[in-house]
Length: 405
Ligand code: GLN
Image (cartoon, rainbow, N blue to C red; front, top):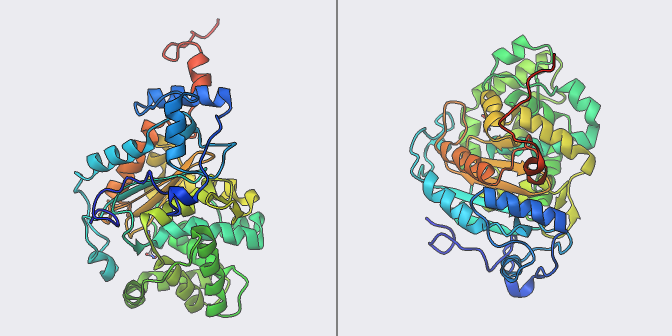
């Protein structure tokens, strides 16, 4: 399957929310000159540059993918980078990867089509670029966890998250029981199963339906539409989640779960089984890239104050025992799920999402990881890089002065 129309969609005629060009505002004004120069340099280095900002072709490119923010276009768009060509190129190169295997500990995930593969970018000014199967629904699984962490911090405060769950990386697999026994925090961080189950238990609710309603509404706000629970996957999870039951009971025994284990698990399982498409996942992550504001309509959906905390813990723990390698090679906060979805955020710039079911040994999608890595490296998105205008003005980067004696 190649997207809604049976082909790799070229999305120049709709924005990230599916609106047609006719209905959407078009972008007309130029980016701030310093930003534009920096971004043009960046895009040229990235090998995906379009024309420099300010010339007619750039204006045409910006206008062709409508966005809502005439004052602050996403830097790469201001620079004229051809993001549609980039996602198509990356999709074409990563589709050749056939390593890994579907998650098999949840039967419904084992049966998903392993060839499905979508790649999407949503910029902070709301433009969408897609390639491949971006409209195929899949179970969000752990890619939901940072969004829930944001809701929990909003509800109980940043100190409570640190004290009652923790924010340290485990260096262990996502469903590690050993980590619970080894670390005095027990749940350790909200992105491993233990911490994520503890996170839903911290929401102020008296029963499972009230707890679920808080989560369901939160995800609907992020996506800009209500998401459905995949009933077949939920039934499959319910019949096979002995390990998570053990984790919830263990946390409860250590006073590190804050409602009944069965209630926390049910809410956690429904959250894990929310159906998302690659486009929806990119839109949701774009809210985090955009400081908590949904790019489609400027609605605040996450408190601005919690974004840096959520992205920091995501950077440290989003890829489980591969988080260090991910930060080392990509340099962006990103979250994976065993459904095969991954999102990454370049703050103030864009969100990238990709999906393909085959996973590596750490539970991270092989194709989706590779696609996001390739896009991030092409656009120089790493958080740890000097901005291009500073970098090009600096002395020769390959020589260091010898230590003065
Ligand atoms: N719901 C899955 C589980 O609890 C999520 C794991 C994941 O996506 N890494 O096992």
